[in-house]
Amino acid sequence: MPIIIYMSSASGSKEIKKQQEAIFRFLDAKHIRYYAKDITLHSFLKAEMREKVGNPSALPPQVFNGSQYCGDYEAFSDAMERRMPLSFFKMDS
Image (cartoon, rainbow, N blue to C red; front, side, top):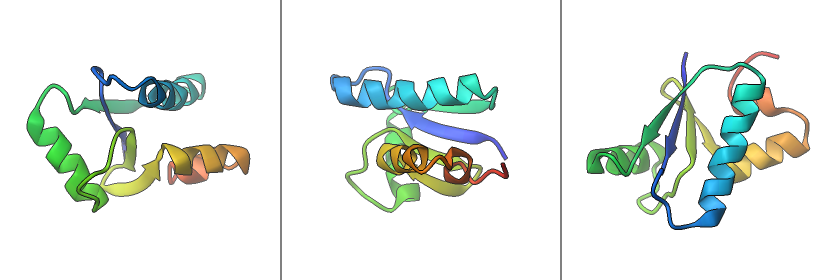
């Protein structure tokens, strides 16, 4: 299953940009393929992201493994602290 990351290329928030970059850096370093869906390119992508997450005010980045929801940046950060990042992405180690 492909890793899908809902992200924003035009976010005015430095925090969101840092969070997205941290996830991308990890995936790139591990040579894990992913697909980034930029919610600023098409308005329906933001609605799609929020519907899939089940939160009408969810912000990027939001991560999925195929159709399975992995979590947001906080969940990724927690998994990194526990040294279990692949479990966050719903991948076998």
